[in-house]
Image (spheres, rainbow over the protein chains, first blue to last red):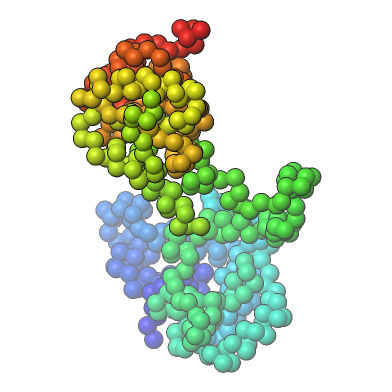
Amino acid sequence: MPLPPALLARLAKRGLVEEEKANKPDSSSGGAKTGAPEEVEEVFAEDYDDPSKPDQEEHVDADVVERQPPPQVVPVLTPEVRDIVGDGPVFYETTACPNRINPYHECVLYCKKRYGMREWDPDDDMTKKRDRMLRRYPLPEGWVEVGDYDSGRYYYWNVHTDEVSWLSPTHPKAAMTKSAEQLVGDPTPVWCIFCILILPLSLFPTLGKKDELDPMDPAAYSDIPRGGWSEGLDQRGKAKTGVDVTASGPLFQQRPYPSPGAILRANQGLKKKK
Amino acid sequence: MSYMLQHLHNGWQVDQAILSEEDRVVVIRFGHDWDPTCMVMDETLYKCADKMKNFAVVYLVDITEVPDFNKMYELYDPCTCMFFYRNKHIMIDLGTGNNNKINWSMEDMQEFIDIVETVYRGARKGRGLVVSPKDYSTKYRY
């Protein structure tokens, strides 16, 4: 059964599919790279231009790392990857490294050793809701459930179109989009912004309280009524004079008055407003 | 002498008086006929009116009767004289710090005619601000 290239690439990145298999849909250059160097004169070009080269290195790296702890979520590497994916939610394992929010940081072996892997502990309430939703709106063909470590929730990924959705795609309110990673380009800054924006708000709940009277507000220490945001702004027709009040400096003496007709029209407009 | 000059009794008349003048400066005196300062000014205006009828026309406006412009034109003085040309307010640098109007009464007829003529010449050239032939800053007045 032919796998969609998006899925293949992802699985290859995680080391679940052999490199050859992942590279098969690619052109012959991929095969040439993995195979023995038959065409010696092309070695140079391969070294620098082949996009799958870093993947391969990562794969080697991952081999070293992941062989020791066997992958828990996906038990065996079966030839039918669809079956693996169909088993249950997919998890993209990441380290619990705090430097992950740094877009220029790439986790190395040390990160894993020092901080360990992120743990998946879904909320009971969330699990209940998600089960109910899946019972009502089962996933159509091609959709895979994926666990999101950051939010502790599941999302749904279409292996054919590479679309994602927080709700089951059959749900009436489901919004299927490209992943944020694809929309923005680099995934890390998005997470970084999320961290910066959302986390401090949740850490400082006092920021949300808007009704409290600021002690520096004149309304707090005098009889002045509490003002709204528009209080004290320049209002039309409230000006003391017809001249341009914004003119200052050398222009201050050169502010002609409007013509009487303009004044009459302005007065008329003010009356109508009242 | 205010009875010899034409009065404007509402805002619309003021507007029309200025709009209808194609090629003459419109001099409007804002104030009250009973005000002594205005009486002096009106005397001068009446004497000048005939001499400068070719390039200026004089109107009187009672600011109690026509309060429409009091706020926008800052008519706080007992007697205020303003110049308009083709529906445009013409400013005069009198040296007093207020370029918008003459807010005192002038007794010298020739001085006033000179000012109006300067306004007329400047306005004809498209100037919005003209310089008075005489400096009216306080050191000359007192």
